Image (cartoon, rainbow, N blue to C red; front, side, top):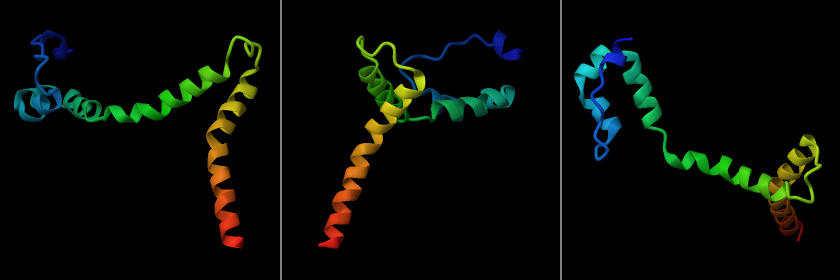
Length: 99
């Protein structure tokens, strides 16, 4: 628990990932925490877009009038909302190939 005694906060204006990369003292003392910091701080914010989109769709499906929907039915509706545009695109491509 040596990391608990090290209470020097990182300034908000610096790149924390770069700090962990450069600071040999942190990497030597807190090797596992340095590895974890590099893994976590390297995750781009754009990864959260797909789950946010699914939560938004689920929120649109679960309205006040549909508050009695069973979980399985709601999952199927969200799935269909995501898949139907792709299927329609496949149908258009299939028709173009047949013509």
